[in-house]
Length: 167
Image (cartoon, rainbow, N blue to C red; front, side, top):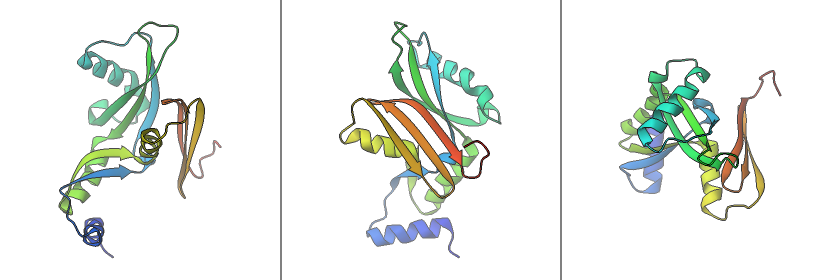
């Protein structure tokens, strides 16, 4: 069969263009997504980066130094003046690099890498974001992801592989 890079090349041919930069959407199972809450959010970006990495380091089965970590601000905490939740995504750096390398082999740079469900959330939020509480259920053959949002803020997120004991 064709390799992944060859398949991407075929898609480019069908599009009639060879983009140099692409957005890459990877499966939810390639990363761990968590909600992290801080009563006090550091003002400096470097301090916040260190605090996020320290908070999530024990939630992954590999060293935090091997992880790519990204986060986005979520809901403000009503009981704390500077408190906030963050939606944190962690993936093994080598796993993300495998996906990026397939794009590179096809001649394109993956400038944006996103998870399938968070990409869907961004699509909904960029159009007409629902107000109040709303639910996104993303069902795939091998897994299901659920996100509950309050307005634009994710307040719950889970990804479960099919066949896991916990339903």
